[in-house]
Image (cartoon, rainbow, N blue to C red; front, side, top):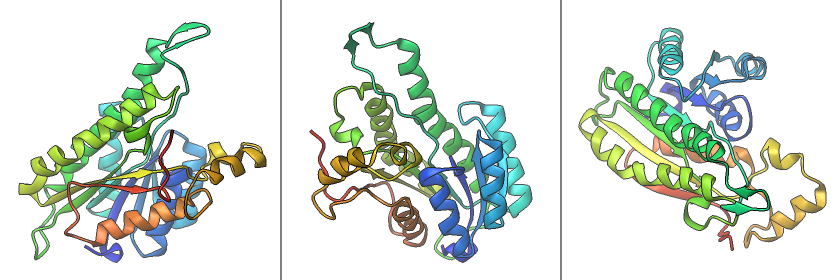
Amino acid sequence: MHLSTTAAIVTGGASGLGEATARFFAENNAQVTILDRDSDRGSQVATEIGGHFAQTDVTDETSVAAAIAHARKKMGAINAAVNCAGIAVGMKTVGRDGPHPLDAFQRTIDINLVGTFNVSRLTAAEMAKNDPEPDGARGVIINTASIAAFDGQKGQAAYAASKGGVVGMTLPMARDLASSGIRVMTIAPGIFMTPMLAGLPEEVQQQLASDVPNPVRLGDPREYGRLAGFIVEMGYLNGEVIRIDGALRMR
């Protein structure tokens, strides 16, 4: 596969890692459809990159199915999906106000894990209809985990569990979809300069960056997009999780 012949959907493409990925793909002549709940920002980014937009709730089967149908109609096919939609909550298992609210835990799992699987399974069914390339390839799915899946900090039980689930389903999904010529990969980012971190005071940003061994800085969302693009084009990558974190190991 090549980015120039890629027709991709990007969830969470209205901001952060998803937006950077959508922009990088479009700059390299890929067709892109952004799936996001934020219709204003999503439509704006889609217009700026010459792509398409579908307002989407990744946890809702009907919403995702409609978005995929819209993307296929606009682009003619879908052969790549990058799942970046997600949320983060910071709550201890038992805090000052009592036990971790169960609804907050469930919502995190629903969006980060169930939402990722929902988009992946429905997109895979669409990719399976593609004519295979000479090597049998019909598509690639790239999911987003986090280094918190491996060394989550205190207050990250819900987030780490959701991202650990994304890591855990990478290999079995790759094996499930192998006969259809669909690859499945996961990226586990470290601390990136997303809109959430960009709103923190400069001294806090510097403190976070100082924990990264090399290079001593926060990740640039565009670096995530470039890695996603590399995965699309490197057809022998399958069933694996790639950390992109400057060697950061959280304590």
